[in-house]
Amino acid sequence: MSTSRFWVWLTRPSALAWSLIAAIFFFAGVLFWGGFHTAMHITDNIEFCVSCHSMNTAYEEYKTSSHYQNSSGVKAICTDCHVPEPWDEYVVAKVKATRDLWAEYRGTIDTPKKFEDKRLELAQRVWHEMERTDSQTCRNCHAFEDMLVPSQKTDAQKQHPKAMEEGDTCISCHKGLVHRMPDMGSLAAAAYAAFEKSIGQIPGQAEIVHPFETQAYFLDDAGQMAAGKVLAGAPFELIGTTGEMANIRLKGWRQDDVARVMYAEAGKRILLASLKDDAQAAAKDAGAPVTIAETGQVWTPMELEGWIPLSGLTADTDGLWNYANALYIANCALCHAAPHLDEFAANQWSGQFKGMVDSSNLLKEEGRLVLTYLQLHGSDMDGH
Image 1: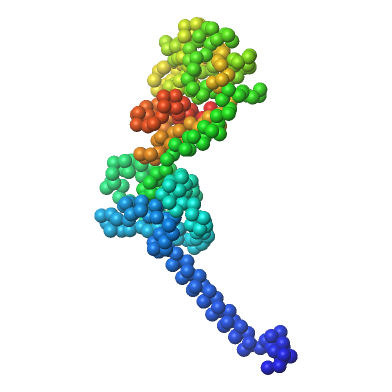
Image 2: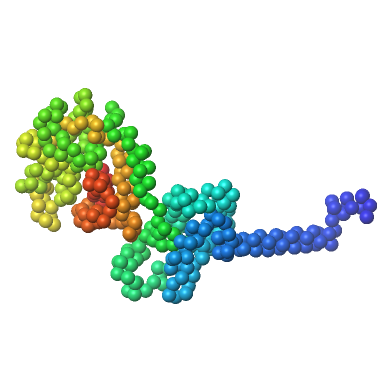
C-alpha cells in the first residue's frame, strides 16, 4: 500500500476498516481488563499478603485468632477484613495498599520492634477506615439481621440490640480481635503534651477556668482563709486575677440540708466543690429553690466568690476534655468497648465509673478528672 493510499485509508476509513479498528480496541480492552482483574485478585490471597517481611508480626497474631481457626471451620483471610467488596471501594483499598509496598521497601515495620513502635498508628488507621465504611467488611459475614441474639453470650445479648437500634458500627466495640491491642497510654501522653502548656497560663480574655487537679481555694487573695476544695475539671467563672491568684465565682446547686457540698446541676451528683463553715456562711442563694419531682428533693442555686492559685488552673476547656477523653479511652477500652459519653446520664456515670476505676491504671486525680468529664458530658448534660 502506497503512502498516499494508506493516508486516505487512515483519514477516511471504510466500514471494514472501522470494524477492524473496533475489533482491535475490543480485544485490547478484554486483554487489559482480564490482566488487570487477574492481577488485582492475585493480590487477594493470603500467601501474597504475608510475602512481605512487614506482615510477619501481623500474620503470627492472626494465626492465634478465631478468624484463623475456630470450631465452625470458617476462616477469614486478610482481604476479607481489609478489602471491601464493592468495586469502587475495592480499587481504592488496593491503591491505598501501595503504602504497604513502600513501607516494605523502606523497612519501617519489618521487625517486631519496629512494628510495635508503629502499632497504634497502624491500628488507628484501620479503625478509622472501618468506621468510615460502617464496618462494611465485617458485615459481609456478620449481619445484624441474621444474628440469633438469644443464643449469644450475656454481654452480647445486651449490647447487640442496642447497637442495632443506635446504628453503631462493629469496630466501635470489637477492637483487638485479630491483632493485639496497641498501648493506648501514648494517646493520653500526646493529649497531655498538647495541653500541658495551658496550665497556669490564663489569657486575659478567659471566662471559664478549670482546676487541673483537686485543690484548695480561699476566701481571700492572700490564701489565708481556707474555703474548701474544688474538684478536678470543675468549671468556674473567672472574675479576674491578682498576682498569683485567680478570683473565681463558684456557681452551682446545693441540696437542702447538705450545705457543705456544691453540685453542678440540681438533682445531679456532679461535685464541684466542698465548702467549709466560713464558705457556707459566705455563699449566697442565686435563685428560687427547685423541687425534683422524682425524688421530692429541694435544690437551691448558689454562688460564692473565692480565690485559687493560678498555677493549678487552665482556661483550655477543649484541651482539658481531650486529655480526659484520652485517659478514658486508654484505660477503659482494653477489656471492652468504652461506652459512649451519652450512654449514661450524669448520675449513672458516677456508679458506672466507680465500678470500673479500680480495674484501671488511672491515678487518683486522673480518675477524678475523668469522672467530672463523663458526668458533664452525660446524656442529660450539655458538656459545660
